[in-house]
Amino acid sequence: MPTAPSFTMGIEEEYLLVDHKTHDLAEAPQEMMDACVAEMGGQVSPEFLRCQVEIGTNVCQNISEARDDLKRLRTAVAEIAGRYGLAPLAVSCHPTADWKDQHHTDKERYNTLDRDLAGVARRLLISGMHVHIGVEDDDLRIDLLNQFTYFLPHLLALSCSSPFWQGQDTGLSCYRLTIFDNVPRTGLPPKFHSWAEYDRSLQAIISTGAIEDATKIWWDLRPSGRFPTLESRICDNSPRMEHALTIAALSQCLMRMLWRLRIKNQRWRIYDEFLIGENRWRAQRYGMSEGLIDFGRGEVVAYPELLHELIGLVEEDAEALGCVKEIEGAQDILTKGNGTDRQRAVRAAELEMHGQDDRAMKAVVAMLIDEFQADL
Image (cartoon, rainbow, N blue to C red; front, side, top):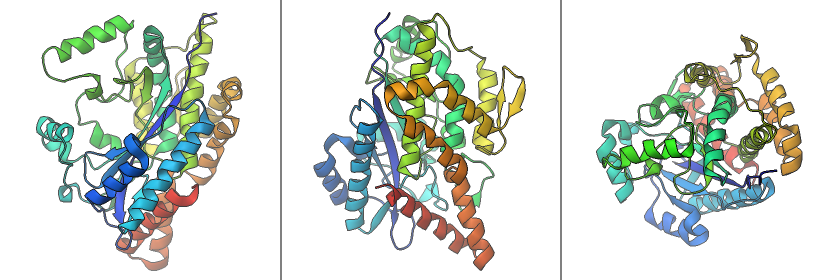
């Protein structure tokens, strides 16, 4: 039997910083970032905008290690930000902030982004969660890339947390992608027959000087430019840590399930990007409320039913990877709603009680502050 991939895990999250009193976005003081680096070392860094901070776990062997590390990082960011009257939000769009009021971080990488992407970059007041899964063999990484793409809309629907933009309900469950999709080299990944084909395509762009390296490829799922991993990038941030861990565990288990099929000379059917894109849009627009297309059955199927089938598919893998509890945690997201559902519920309740939209939006931010702390 071929050697199994390690299926190690790493989680990256981007947080928005708000003033604890006004709930408006606030820039991180340099003293705060220095304190974060002193506490967390290279696991924390500034993000493109000064109101953002990014964390990344160590390479984790299992979900238990990931929980411990993510909890430590979230706790440290919250505690240090609190010293400066700030609070972090694990959400993909601030409910009321205006991108025109924000400033990007003065760092070579971000100065280059601002120069290259121009007006597109300036609207990137968005944050996301990235999940790395260790797959050491290059060609296997491409094989799993082609198959795993099918499940990206399913993961997105669970994670949606960006319904509001500049004080308006967009009607979408994930507005973040409408912003990010304006950036080049984003969206669903193309299909490749081998690592060699992928590398030739990548080098063809690098050799022109258009991009420096693979880190400037921002597909929803990509071979990492720095690690021997497949990196899922489609998901919104999860306001609650346990929900983020559920999504990470599902990603890990799906990778293992696809590998399991491979060693039995089987595989997941690969559908055209046009079809996967339709489910991507349905998840972006409706989250979990209107279902996704089951292309085998040729019909739209309710999301709870699809999720139940998905959990059944990876039951063996969850046992092997020690993340049964986290996979079962998907039911908690179904019951309580994803981040978008919960934000809309808070706003609706506050509007019904007081009829003031500004007050309602502040109540949403207050809820997001509390949810960041809830599982720490």
